[in-house]
Length: 436
Ligand SMILES: Cc1cc2nc3c(=O)[nH]c(=O)nc-3n(C[C@H](O)[C@H](O)[C@H](O)COP(=O)(O)OP(=O)(O)OC[C@H]3O[C@@H](n4cnc5c(N)ncnc54)[C@H](O)[C@@H]3O)c2cc1C
Image (cartoon, rainbow, N blue to C red):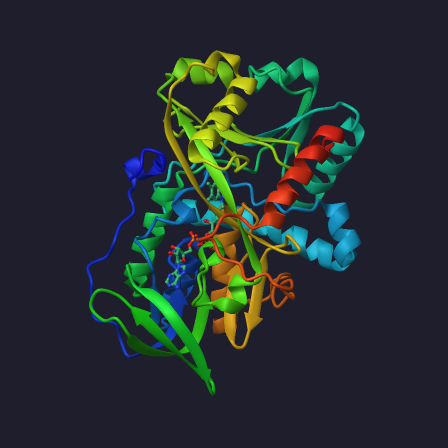
């Protein structure tokens, strides 16, 4: 592992391969990808007694699901009023309701399955850059409490120090329904549950092609046992999200992979971490391109993440450290023990997707908030096949591409993604967001 690709989470839960085994010639359902999306779909389908085969190109835990910040944000890129403008109030209500249901369902899943993934029900604070919007924020929090029973409050300047030692913000917005997990531990527990339910998982096996023949699909899989193994299936769920490769060209053209990256400090000790973040909660910022940060589950270190703004790993790591020192000047000289990056996927309309094209189900496009969305959409994709509770506000929403865009995470983020990041940074400077 390169010094520059050193995910903190992998110390306790490293990527894992399953023993190589012969692939079947037929499966009722093939799921491509074993991240949160694919394993969630596998659990739901296998528990319903279906014949499920999951095919994962790498080891389990090498892609986004075990690289993320572990904040159960379940964010949407648009607030409720923007959703109403885009989709009308009925659809906006359904989308918003699903975002609350998805987060609550992740917390239910972790609790009911007794999953050891350092789940910390600690709430999240969004740092604000202005006090102008207090009345609107308070009204909005009252609306979501009345509708979803979720509690939150405006944090006035005089109470900021109860949440953070940083003097970077003017005020805050605290919600108690968002918490933190150890994402790699959750992922490996999902693998265990899927296997126990009867799903067959093949790692280090790539799907390299797929054609539809009548009602069925023929997929080509490749691994160290067989370079070209033909496998038929009645249903396919493509759970490859930002890591979609040329085997799924329709999806590749419709997702923009964007680099996201994280640093974790050296052990600061619990006293220092608590002095900086007294409630040990999760943090975000009211910016289009802001940082998110949190204590590590042991309370000894601070993890901070953001979008890639520099071309080289070294410069990107330094910039994140500068961001951390901007929040907490006492950490300017702290050693950074871990730095890594990964890809998140944006559809062109920046709304999560449960698309269906030519019979294949594509749950994807979580815009960097997949800890909640990926598990939810995987489950919903499975329910589409089972025909049970398949209703989702996202089901079959159109998914567009753009001319001359071919996608792919193996190249650098496309020019328009870099342009969009610069544009959003500029807008953050001129007009910061008024809420989180
Ligand atoms: C640095 C970083 C920080 C993040 N922070 C947060 C956060 O704090 N909160 C949050 O909610 N979200 C966060 N996210 C986003 C979140 O991690 C993702 O949205 C989520 O994990 C997506 O899950 P997934 O299962 O869809 O995709 P992945 O976990 O990426 O899994 C896709 C899998 O498909 C496999 N695959 C691809 N092509 C093929 C093929 N041809 N054959 C077989 N297998 C294939 C890949 O190998 C991969 O394992 C972050 C992401 C990153 C990278």
